[in-house]
Image (cartoon, rainbow, N blue to C red; front, side, top):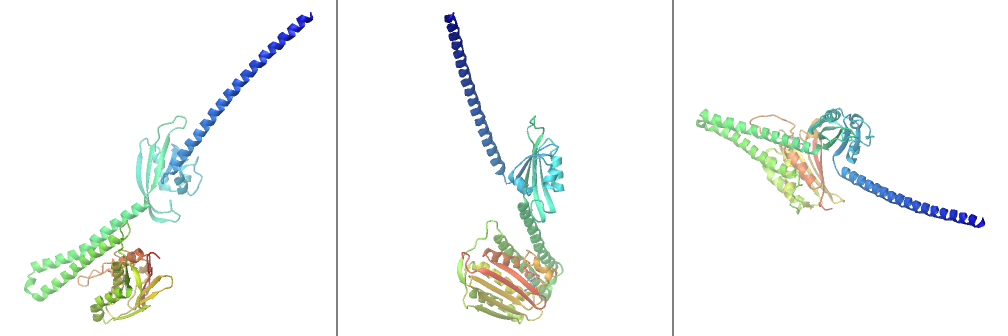
Length: 406
Ligand code: ADP
């Protein structure tokens, strides 16, 4: 009986052992499966993280604002440029209106995302602060939208790209204005020349030498004006070239440049009985710059002081002072008719003139002189300001480094 009991116990023990071992094997297997799943899961997680990082990098690498929206205009994805454009407002899950806050832009995006074909449109916003901290006169945008391949779980999605083309738009506008102004300025003297030539041919004026001379003198004045305009337009276009002004740098004595200008203007000074007071401290001021542009700038300023004040003898004070911080300060002051304050903000604009008379014998200026002066001084790292009290004084003041590298 005892043997049977022992045998049964042994059998039970053996069975338990076998069961226990099976359990251990199963447990090990389960653990191995768990670890392998966990590993796979971690790998998937790492891959997803790296994919998301790559996607984020890719989206943020665009300078343009990028939005993915559903067809209800609810924003799903944006890039960093879009967040910047919307000044940090909450975007994901919100509507286009709450993100962009500009009626025109929102209207366009909302209608574009209803369409099934790609759309591209240039939008000019007048007096809007969209994308800028302060309201700007005009800003220009290209809005490029297209439906994305349909994703069942996401519904219909659209991508919208907003590209800021304000600076290209302004450059185009400046070019257009320049061409329009230049054509107008050239057409006027050409029309006068043609008119006088027709009179000379048709009216037998040639028989009257005095009248013919008068006509020819006018023709010469206006053809001189055309050449001056062309020269000045070429200078302006060089100064305004996008690649920066090509300065031919040299060391030169500012005194010599001014003395040469006064010498060239002496017929005008004498005929107008003008007085020039010239002071330079110290007596020699050496500048490093392009003497051609310095000559143009200073000549225009001194000539303006003379030619704008032909009625009464004008006094022109030219003061040059070398300052301690390697800056030169140049003041050209006249006591002539001056510039009314309402014109001062525009005086350096191309083709801007205070008096816009179109007399045939009195040849007007080109309106390009001061624009050339400003560009030339700025190309040398300096600045020019103007101050005027009509009938009392007009002062143009230049502050400029004596050496561009300093
Ligand atoms: P332009 O002299 O060829 O007309 P500028 O660009 O040199 O062109 O000058 C623009 C305008 O500024 C002039 O038409 C004139 O009305 C005004 N101006 C410039 N300098 C003077 C000055 N010293 N006194 C009065 N008006 C001036």
